[in-house]
Amino acid sequence: MVIWQMFVDSFITQGGYKEALKGLAVTLVTAISALIIGIILGTTIAFILLSKSNNPLVKTLKIFFKGYVAFFRGTPIAVQLLFIYFVIFPAIGLGLLKAEIVGIIIFGLNSGAYVSEIMRGGILSVDKGQTEAGRALGLSSVQTMLKIIIPQAVKNVIPTIGNEFVSLLKETSVLSFIGVMDLTKAFREIGGGNYEYTIPYLILALAYLILVYIVTNIVKNIERRMRASDRQ
Amino acid sequence: MIDNNQTFNNEILVKVNNVYKDFGKVKVLKGVSCNIKKGEKVVIIGPSGSGKSTMLRCMNLLETPTYGEIWFEDKLLTPVDPYLHFDIIRQSNTYKQLIVNEKDKNPDLTDEQLDEQVIALIKKDDLLKKREGKEFKLAEKKFYNENYLDVNLTRRKMGMVFQHFNLFNNLNVLDNLTLAPVQLKLKTKEQAEEKAMELLCRIGLEDKAKVYPSTLSGGQKQRIAIIRALAMEPDVMLFDEPTSALDPEMVGEVLALMKELADDGMTMVVVTHEMGFAKEVASRIIFMDEGKIKEENSPQEFFANPKDERLKEFLSKVL
Image 1 (cartoon, rainbow over the protein chains, first blue to last red):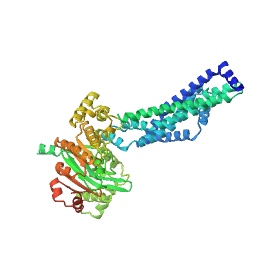
Image 2 (cartoon, chains in turn yellow, brown):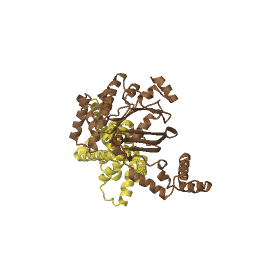
Image 3 (tube, helix red, strand yellow):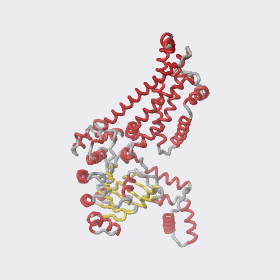
C-alpha cells in the first residue's frame, strides 16, 4: 500500500492532478486540431493528386505533395517533431513559436499525409458514373468533386478517419520530445516526484484506453447515423 | 436564294467529323462521321463492342476523340484536327515542300490540280508532322480561337442519360434535379425547385421528391435521371442504353417517357437494343460495327432493305 500512498501524495496533496488535467487538455486539443488540419489538407492533396489537369501549376503541386506525403509517412513522428521544431522552424524565422502550437502544426501536417491517402482511396471508391453524371450536366470538375464525390467519399472513409484519430491521440504521447506537457509527460512528472511510477503509468495507460474507447464509440455512432440517412 | 425554312430544318446540332478513338492499343472508333439535325431522333444500333456507346460519349466529350472533331451548333469542342481543314494543311512545311517536289515531277499540272494532289497525298499517308512551322501553328491557333467553346458550357445543352442511371447517391431526388441549374447559376433555388416539381408531377413521382435514390426502383431512377437532364432545358438528349440495366417490366415506363419526349420535338440520339422503339420513334437509324458506321437509313428502309451483310445477319438474330 506504500506505492498507493506515494501516488496519492504526489497526485492529490502536491496538486499533480492539475498537471494531469492540463496534459489531458493538451493531448485532446492537439489530436483534434491535427485531425481537422489533416482532413482539410489531406482532402485538398488527394484532389490535386487525382487531378488529370495538364496545368503546369497542378503538375508542380503534384510533385511537391508526393514528396510531402513520402516524408511524413516515411519518417517517425518523433523525428519530424525534432527536425521541424529545432531545425526548420528556427531557420525560417518561426523559432519563437510556442511548442504547443508547433506540435499542433506538425501533427496536422503528419495527419494530412495519411488522410490524403485515405481520401484518395475514398474518392476512387465512388462510382465513376457519379463523376460522369456531374460532368455531363455541365458542372466543372471542382464542382463535381465538392458537391457529389467528396460527400460520398467522406461517408466511405469515416471508419478509417476514426482510426486515424485514434492513432493521432496515441502518437501525441511523443510531444514531450519538444517539451510540451501532454498527458504522458504529466504522468511522468507525477511519478518523477518520488520516483514511484507503478500507479502513475498504470493510470496513464488506462486513461488512453478510455479515451480510445470513447472515440471509437463516437465514430461508430456517426457511421450508423450516416448509413441510416441512406435509407430515409 | 436559300430557302430559309429549309435551312432551319437542316440546322445541325451535333457534328461528329471523322472521329477516331483508341483505348490504348484497342481501336474502338475508326473514322466515324455523322450529323445530328435539330428535331431528329437518331437511333444507333449494333453489336456490343461496335463503338456505338463510345461515339455517343464522344458527342459530349465524356470520351475525348483521339483524332477528329466534335462540333456543337457552330462551336468546336475538341482540339483542331488539321487534316479536316485544307486551309490549315496549306500552311504546313510538308505541303509547301511537296508542292515544290510535285511541280518538278509534273510541270504541266495547274496550281489547282497540284494543290488537290498534294492534299490528297498528305491525307492519305498521314504526312503532317509534330512541327510544321510557325504559319501552320498560327493558322491552327486562329481557327481554334475563332471556333472553340469550353465543353462545360456545351454540356448544359446536351442532356445525357446513362445505362446505370447515375443519380447522385448523396442527394435526395429534388436536390438531384436542382443541383446543376442552381450551381451553374442558371436558376435560383426557388425557380429550380418549381421546375423540378413540375417535372416530377409530369412523371407522377412528386411524392418521391424528398427520398434518396437508393429507395427507388430501376424504372423510377431512370425516369428521374431523364428529367434531371430535362431540368437543364437541353437542346439535345443523348441516351446511352437507357433500358439495358432495367428489369423487363420496367422497360415500358422508361420507353414511354422517351416517346413522349420525342413527340414533344426533342432532338434525341439513342443507343439501344430496343428494335421496337427504333422502328416506332426513330427518324434515322445508324448501324455500327467494328468502329465504323456501316449503314444509315430511315427506319422503313433500314428494316425492309438492309444492304450491309453484317447488318442483315444482325437483324436476323435480333428480330
